[in-house]
Picture 1 (cartoon, helix red, strand yellow):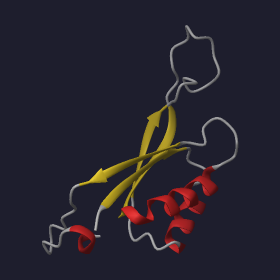
Picture 2 (cartoon, rainbow, N blue to C red; picture 1 turned 90 degrees about the vertical axis):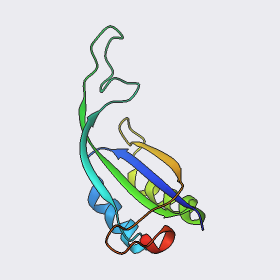
Picture 3 (spheres, rainbow, N blue to C red; picture 1 turned 90 degrees about the horizontal axis):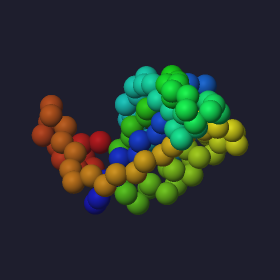
Length: 111
């Protein structure tokens, strides 16, 4: 079975509802980091010559079976969408393996 990592970068306000929806969908774990960043809007809609403004964001990483990626991404999109700048980005990566250090379990068993 193949595994994928879904990385979400979004504003701080939607985390609780996203976490609840992912839990309900059977996501068994996640890593959350507070980060600073901006997209092509440079943090705000300012003159092109202005320095970018790094805004507080959350980066959420989850690992799921590749077959579940599309359904999990749909849940994430539903929870984060407002139609305004700052809704976030979703990145999807293929993983070669996952190893749980404590038990030596690999692949899906390591999740």
